[in-house]
Length: 381
Image (cartoon, rainbow, N blue to C red; front, side, top):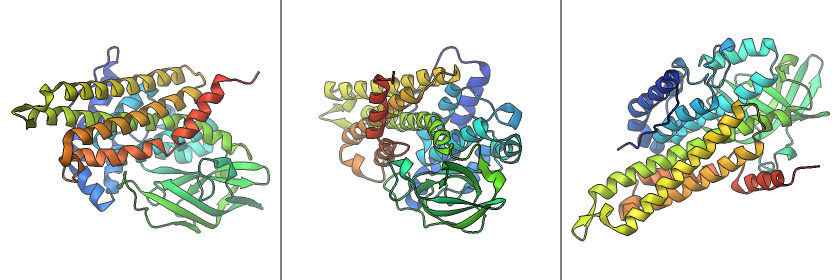
């Protein structure tokens, strides 16, 4: 059963993009998601095919071979992928939101022509490496070093929890020089770039997450993005976009849990009648549906503000916070509605429950989002 998204005012182009994403998710992702979860891996061909359809260039400008989508359309397409499998969605979201945003806003013309075009065409998959073993929520405490050596930079250090770190073609890596935190474009075939064994995660198991060792990675000077010492600001801009992606990833997870629950409660009978006829079940389903709709609406409002050029740091944190906690709540209720079956791997809500949890953690924990929102209530003046 599918609870379709019907939003008035979408253009024909927008509807076509959403329908294309929905069809791809229905036929090429969802039938295989449980198996990918069991073996903790999905084939790169899935990402390559999404790239050929343009979905790796959703946030890239048309002049650099991207789709140049407005943010709402991007979020609608990403939700369709997330409802089918959040592991694929996060690889897509990281690529589109963070390195794409950073290159678009701060890359030189030469960097955009060399890397952004190939990323938008789906020829290169990109990732992002900010966190470190001792620098998670306190990302500004990162210790990876960048040392200038003539006409080159040499990077050394360790990164943690890098999405796409073992499968990407290039990574946007944050490192500290003598002038501050910098952003570097690092091809993953560079000598000294060493991804670790994929992490054995609770959820999003098919998404590639690794620790990275950077062992004297030597890069030409033109692999520095923007200005030396300005990288942390670039990363925070990328994370504003990334948090909207995680918000709709959470919406997709919650929506699918709701869809499964609605179908199950219509079919499952207890005490001589379907579960859907019990008021306690009806109320639970109503609350689940309301939270899904509210989370989506908040993300789309923030997306609209972003497209108008407004500062969305605080609202993006609100959207990510609300949607991730909604997803965790909705999937918990779904497991409860399924009863004993909900606890079994053979039923889909168990996976959705596991996938939902990390949305409260990565790209800024719920606690960090609350700090950002609270600070926004007292602007400096």
